[in-house]
Amino acid sequence: MTGRVVLVTGAARGQGRSHSVRFGERGDSVIALDLCADLPLVPYEQSTRDDLDETVALIEAAGGSALGIVADVRDADAMASAVARGTEAFGPIQVVCANAGVIQLKPANEITPQDWSAVIDVNLTGTWNTISAVLPGMTAAGQGGCLVITGSVAALKGTPGMAHYAASKCALVGLTRTLATELGPLNIRVNCVAPTMVDTEMLHWPDAYALFRPDLDSPDRDDVIPVFAAGHPLGVPWVDPVDVTEVVEWLASDEARYVTGTVIPVDAGALIA
Amino acid sequence: MSGDHSGELAGRVALVTGAARGQGRAISVLLAARGAAVIAVDLCAEIGSTEYHGATQADLDETASQIRAAGSMACTAVADVRDLPTLQGVVSQACAELGGLDIVVANAGIAGGVPIEHMSASTWQEMVDVNLTGAWNTVKASVPILFDRGTGTGNPIAGTIVLTSSANGGLKAPPNLSHYSAAKHGVVGLMRSLANELGPRGIRVNTIHPTAVATDMLLNDATYRLFRPDLEQPGIADVVDLFSGFHSLRTPWIEPIDVAYAVAFLVSDRARYLTGVSLAVDAGLSAR
Image (tube, rainbow over all chains, first blue to last red; front, side, top):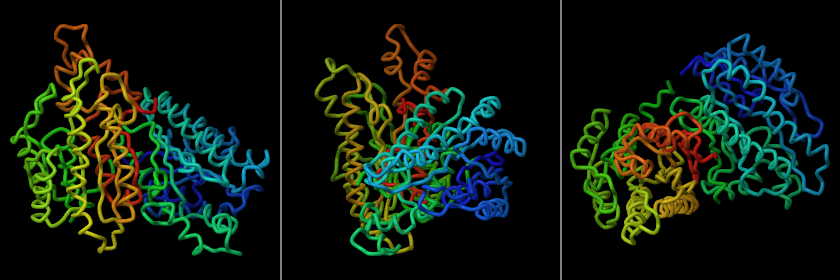
């Protein structure tokens, strides 16, 4: 199936860009949405309008149609407007990648109420706002649909230093299962991908390296490779965005017409290690 | 339609057990369509404790001709997955003929529903022997040959194994399936340990968990009688609503090809970093 209308949040770079470009290659119309602004409590640089424009250019170069929208997934009204704009441009949305997310690394006893909200509001409420904005049009169109939620292996396996992140991602598992059950009769499938570390800007920043290499003064990318690799039976330090994209693309295809309510780790074995 | 994946398994050799019909045939033919040579193994005989007929040599021959029609080489063997020495013999010989082994799909299995007070020890034992020990035997016979393949072509993955579990038996556990659920949960433990053990050797191991699949194993008189004891001679039409009720998506069962698509994805390089994964193809059954 090609020529679908796809909404991707967090589309300016990383996994969201990778998914967006793949849908573009398939001839789909992609609504590429991102905040394109820094968040005060998120300790690494966020994407920019230039990043989002680059995603749009890459989708179009791949053969798809694209509409870049700057919007904050935490803002339900803004998401409703964004979906209305996208639908006006391309028609009813059939596939959603609720992918926008942030991380902050802190010991539990240092997480402030503001930190908690900074993570929960984007990862959990932002995902809900995205889906909530899409569902009225998706159900009215009556053609079914496919929602893919970006979770994390951190939702499924205890990982120190990210209590709020893990809680937000685990909540998405509950959302996935409930929505799959509730929306199945409408032929709307809902699944969750649960990546391990992915080679994106969210992974590579100095304090993240420091958390995993407390033995070193100013660890760099090379210093974390053996530590990350040790957590993966397949021996790789991280996966690439495209590895998540492959699962997303498969879930959104007709081959997965009876796959719903699943959580699929893309984790080089981290979960069972 | 989905993306074009024809040829993505070119040069690979796949072993599929329970290949004479049903899921095994669909998997064999799809892997062949995507370029893999297929070793199709089946018992081709009746199994004592099941209430449906086993596959036949004619079924296995039909699988082989469909593999060839899909453009790939086929090698068939009649073997019992409970018989390790025989399985090792036929797998070694077929791999020598086809030039190695890359993909293993331990799919052979049986099913049946029996309340524990009526279940004989031999019914329990046969279930565990076929569905659990048979999967272990299949891996045991294959792993030395997968090790031989190694990594040499830039592909980081030396081999990939998919074990067939079940949504009902391996994720849920409904009544009257104590033997089946024990065996299919056992398959998950087998998969997880092997994923940890073989990951460093470049071998991925995953399970698939289908819901009810439209095959002879499900769609037979014994099933209809089990689910509709209120009727004298229940047929397929009498269980459609009941089976649909298990699922969030509106379907009573899925087709063998739906399982084959999941397997074909898992064994492809598109899933190069998926290992230790239990992939449900169950129309939402296990999310409830």
